[in-house]
Length: 291
Ligand code: NAP
Image (tube, rainbow, N blue to C red; front, side, top):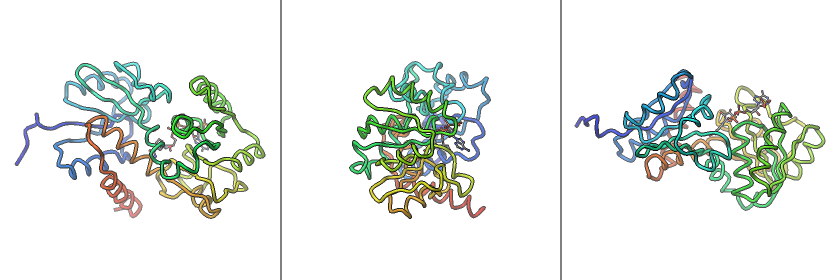
């Protein structure tokens, strides 16, 4: 039976050039599985219209929205409240509408926390290397320090000034965690050798068989290597780590867990991760095979 437009609830994603986003695929599969009369809108918007779009979504009955590149910081001044994790990361990837308020959250920290949980005992209280110095790196550092008690993190990034700026700002927020920037090959090798956890947060490995770490870096069997990229599902870094006997986690887990948290915030419902995982894997497979 056709439903009346008033009975439909809306979630969506706000960003630019959204042709490759997997959020509609995973959330729509979940709506169908849970029998929810929800729609997921893809809201591709030019910069001058971001504020008016955010305000208009409330009128249009949206319960929440994801926010992606390039607007994760742009949206912040237009919100009525910002969750502490989003303040810590300095970016918002989820909006929740409730009455007159629009609250901004960052679910990447939860996405990383829940992805790492399977190997939590291996990494808790150890040291870490985070590769990259953007939003993903901030979320990784926050989760390492706050969720896993990692008290020393080495940051390695193409532009060392960006790594220094990241370390300086996060030191203020996480005073019990030692954050250092490594630039020299030998320092990097030593930091990786000592680490319980190595996290890649750069796009290196997405467009070809490249690793964000030099080829001479090796891993050990006790280590956990987490690559937040989800295409390919197993990156060159992960394959190298597996060859050395390390445990690996791919970015698909983070994508699912951060999406699950956004969904929970917007709907108060638990997310069937396996339904979302199957939908995303099917979509990725169809992209690879060109269907
Ligand atoms: P970002 O804020 O733009 O930061 C990107 C970082 O990668 C910067 O430190 C940048 O170095 C470095 N980088 C970029 N291109 C590089 C290259 N060719 N060689 C070496 N370093 C390079 O991006 P982000 O938001 O952190 O996202 C990073 C990646 O993670 C993206 O591919 C994104 O799709 C993925 N991601 C996945 C999930 C998930 O759910 N699985 C969630 C968030 C992000 P510079 O400082 O030198 O520019």
